[in-house]
Image (cartoon, rainbow, N blue to C red; front, side, top):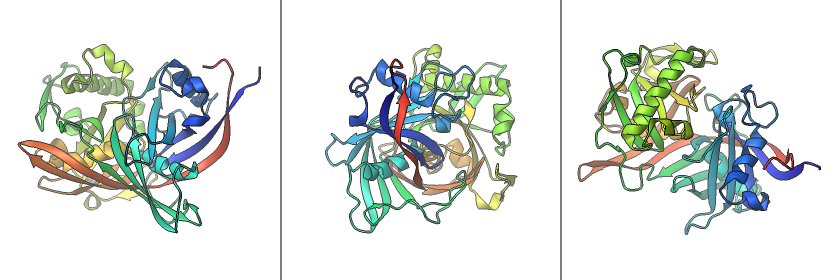
Length: 390
């Protein structure tokens, strides 16, 4: 039988890429959550691939390029579209729906207009209200438009993206947990009991936060790092990757995200784990020099078991939010004190993210996080999938 052809759009959003679908274009059995949808996403992306290359699919063999998105008219009052995101594991039989992709949130706003769900209107900036269906949160995308379409080209530069494009401003509303548990344990800093083989002394301080995406922050120095590491320094060290995954599992248990250690393998997308350090000079992956005085702190984060080439959008929200709360390890690395934004250094360069936090009845909450990204259609048409793939 011939392959099934499904209308799809391949888009870059921020420092990620993914395959975008309109809900109504999917085969009927894939319009609802379940194995058929998971299998479709996997076959489109080219997973699971024991070679780790995703040669027989649209994926790029990194966590940043192994993603699928479904956009549909919103069923939530006051919103334009619903945005559902699937992180496809590269080499294992798994699609993680537990969190959001902040980078592709940018493309979701643009795609809403491309797909005809939102009219571009007059030249200027079109506001698109997005319901992030994975986590039940509102994202507002301010998308530049011209001549009745999304304006994709421009002069906005984003470290980690080679070419400039048009700037899209994102607002993440109430990015912490819906019930205000931004710090799930009730502490700004927790002391984790870890095996002696992982950290000398068997104790490790961490800031555990749920804002943008559940994230575990630890000091780079406590793990023997400087915070200036690039991908190769971590991703070519299997022992280091195993140590980070063990720490991620311990943090996930403390945050209440999993009940048993073995559950971490089925929740690869969340929580993230990151290490922070005070500013210092380093050279980004592109060869660009980053001066200590140009950043507030350094951050390196892992996604799907590997050090990210730049910084995940949702983790950027977590960084800015934690930096805004005096007493966290992130705030400490940034020099302490109150702040409403943070400019941090990552492997590809720097990024500034703003956050608004407040202390209410002894509990910290976040009201908003703001960042700039860009998005662009790379290809549109139909993706071909074998008829028996799902």
